[in-house]
Length: 138
Ligand SMILES: [Zn+2]
Image 1 (spheres, rainbow, N blue to C red):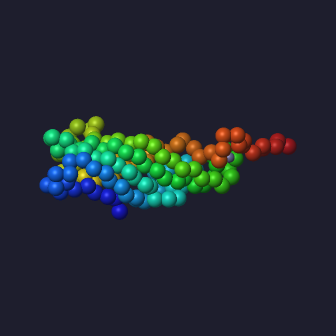
Image 2: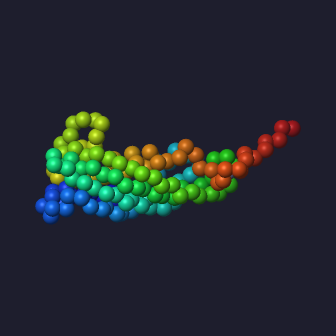
Image 3: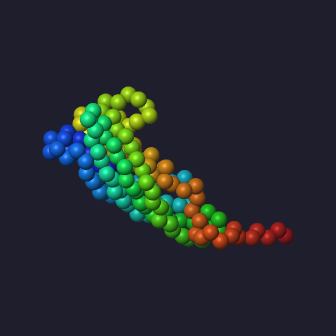
């Protein structure tokens, strides 16, 4: 299930900044590398900050494991992918640049999808020196 963040509740409790830690299942369609899939839940460690105008700044990191065929030599391999992500959520926002939320609750779905795609490498390689198999011409 994609986590939500209750901004109203955090405001009511005067928790204007804090940490959000959770794991979620990424949609398989986010991986465009052939014969590769995400083999672990995505770990999210996020920091939030609620600003004066109720917009919310999210920064933090995501980590997940890719598993499948090496894009070069086709050997089974896996790789841990991690990196920094950030998002800016505007209450009832209309500007397409930022994420929007309404009714006091942020749904992280779109942000997390975008973040996984942002961190996704173009290919999975078992190591830097592996080579493509020779195709003998006869
Ligand atoms: Zn390889």
